[in-house]
Image 1: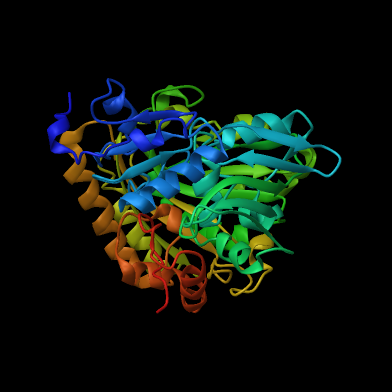
Image 2: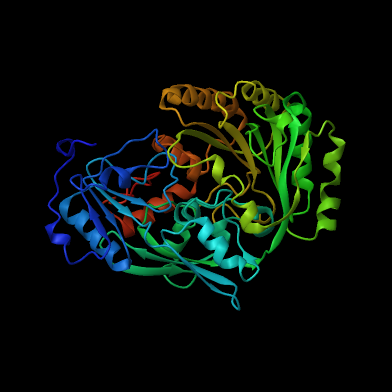
Length: 464
């Protein structure tokens, strides 16, 4: 049990009557459980946690933090790798009670509350045969995913999540409430498309949906000794494949669970997880070339409801594990880079550690780098090395592996990274991620949050 004396004391009497959700301080019995983060490597102790039930709660919370001079963090779905959804001795706004998605099947849109998970949106939209690009693990929060840009199984066909963002409702640093879209508060809307949580608390997202019912998807696996051949084939194939086909490449240790055959259990392998939007016949035609790579150890591609594919790996990554991420954008995968990849894949330190290459070409590349805060439309992949393990004793092991792997591959990358795959890595990395867009973002930050109240994030500092 936490010693409450170690945490800053905050008088919350002024919040009583203003908050319909829950006000949790270190003296509450629920404090330790509520403050837990998805990434158990990070342990933070807020002075107060407010589990907001509605927009009025968010407004009151933001105003209280500003008045009391408290550092403010915002937790949506809670996956944030760097633990930036919480803060020591400050105020955590927890949006987890604000969940739900309302679908308009005629307009093909969904209004999604700020604390919702991908699974909430998938469930609501699938009833109408609809979906939108949004992640690969259904327990990911819609808020953080979208504000960082948003990759997903449908990205090559329908773009990033932000390419399907129509509107956001935002509580600003002064406690005011605004809507930002293509017609109103256009600068704030532009910044919200990839600029992270720098500009306010987004309480609602309106997203464009597309016809997506049953997809053809699942993993294909090769022995690790074939990794060089598979990765060389993949780098050329996926960029020429029809945009209806998406596939992310990964190195992994096969978990001892269905649907993986026992002969592969706990073996290090090279894999590609596919998603085809269309018929089975079209998918088989599109995927026919992969059979030429040889030594295919598993072909797990089959018709699946889109929400099933989007939640297929949820059970492998429950909350409470140790996590360490490193990421970069990649434009080309050279033979030399492939050699470095395979060398590091041989050193996978724990059964849950992995490396993924997510394609971001196709529809995601049709916009210019300055059309949204996302500054890497010319990238072809988002690359991420992830050290994961349930045992805190392995925290240093997985961190060192991820950092060493990243150091080996960073010279072959574009320099910046997908913000949703970053730890707390400092201002130089943030600026490298936004490139020429950073100055404009800093100007918008100055307009909407001049005191940098929202700084517990991949921070964009207000321009002076």
